[in-house]
Length: 223
Length: 223
DNA sequence: CATATAATCAATGATTATATTGAATGGTTG
DNA sequence: CAACCATTCAATATAATCATTGATTATATG
Picture 1 (cartoon, helix red, strand yellow):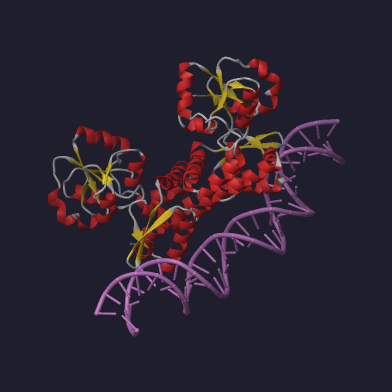
Picture 2 (cartoon, chains in turn yellow, purple, orange, blue):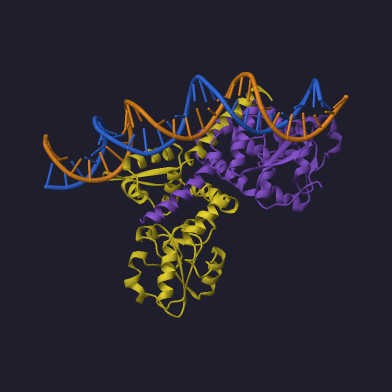
């Protein structure tokens, strides 16, 4: 191979390796997973991850240099968000690979969620069809700001924390499909447990909003 | 957040970070890019990358531990291949992000390929339509073993090294669409240059075979 | 302007990743 | 079985990454 070609390839793969490197830390993957829901401040992210602010800031700098996140300043706070849809696609591809290929992922997930679920979750496609048929209520149990940043078209927002005292807002005849951040988020599972215990018909969507969006299914953002 | 939930998330994201880490080196990305075409021996990969065999073997071990590649043994040689389609999807997502988001990638590509292309390449969808219309010849200019491992349905194989002496196999009336390994591979570009210089009508497909396959377009493997 | 808040920076030591070298392994060939 | 080939392993030195700490910057508030 020619020298010029070798230099070209080295430079090019170096750039792509930088991208992979930016995601090569558990905290940074978790940050992307969270930011895929909605923008957040550094302090907020730090408390969600249970880490010192300086450490989270350091990781955010790595993601920023890799152009994976962007900043919006508001007063003395900075809100980070994912730079574009391709960032979530990388994380999603990694997640899919891990789920299908790594026994360890399966083991960890199964041992945490074992026996907590009686009913099979719905896939995105299944829910999409059910919505078209008009026979379900879609329930978003994430925090309100994440709902506002984007939610499944037609979904109702009741954050998991408020669910118990807002049960009367939900119908008892139609089936309720709850969803939250993604396949490893516990909120929708908790909601289904609570709802079925109270006599509602409820099931869980197996994916989160970013996946729903990535499938090209309809999303609404509150202006 | 509960302690158990924190431990669960840490364990889970740790697994996914391992996957990203496995790709966090330019040589390993290049290896995946090559292996996405066809299986190869260690020695062969080492000479393609211009690196010592021991170094390539070391990188292959990293990919193997991450379950991204598998081995087939044949005599005293070992042939590595990508473990499944999801591996290429991760690399493709990284590549797409880099292409759309990183100015540096654009600069490197442009400075290497500047002025070498007179004609716009075809997209996968465009070629797919042209094939249905039946008015093009699809030309695979990769090495023969890569063609055998999988090629665009109906494509003709003339490795770039043999192109000059096999020109008579190609028609002069129909347009020839050449393709190779991927957007950064030079073979298809060289083929188009050669063919147009000889009076053929020729253009390039902008993607490589693994991308074509990922788009769900028809692929044939030689048995 | 002083104080408080949010975020970043800089320096540190500890850990982990990397390339290189040469030796060891496993299989093939004569 | 000896010689050989392809690959891996092991050891080492160098470089990069990481968490932590405390200092610094930037903005808001009184």
